[in-house]
Image (tube, rainbow over all chains, first blue to last red; front, side, top):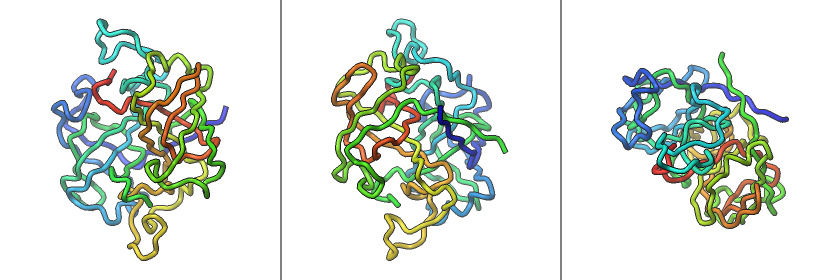
Length: 135
Length: 135
């Protein structure tokens, strides 16, 4: 079996300190947070602007990677569903997608939000939300 | 340095045979393609329906992971830009995001599209495009 290795390009610094405190989605009352880019990747921020819409991809390091089916939103009244049909954090490769706006830029730190990822969550990629920015 | 390992959950089977043939984005004339799910992950498709909107995440295994800045869309008249501000495939963790519609389901194969990923590209995650499907 082939596999692929990701390196954290940064980490979330949030007032949400644990998974239990985090809402399920950013639009559900999540705060803004800082994204601290690792120094060796800071050059990849060239051109970044306040107000830009980004997709931040996190690696949900506390998620259970063995789960293939569960009840959406933990609601047992909803039928058992495959994780590829939902946004459950439990999944074989626990990547999280977070549409955010850049609120502030301070060197290699970006204030972004709203974002439901909790403190110390590793970030593995950042992209423009616009496919027009395709490189 | 911490790192994280992804396992392919499936592979793209496309009429686009090389990177050179692939458009930059799905909406730019890309075809439909088959996504063949690896047998051990097939249970994660439970509930999948034709017409559903998904986000497919690929691992762009041919991308140059050392590039931090380039000219958007390879257009040298555009200023040098950090890859975190664009959709360039070249980036430290070369994850591709592909919004697609499910066209057909055949066992553990999904016909999806439009998708610009070329043949044999590994897929590392599939999510509902709707955050309402959050698990």
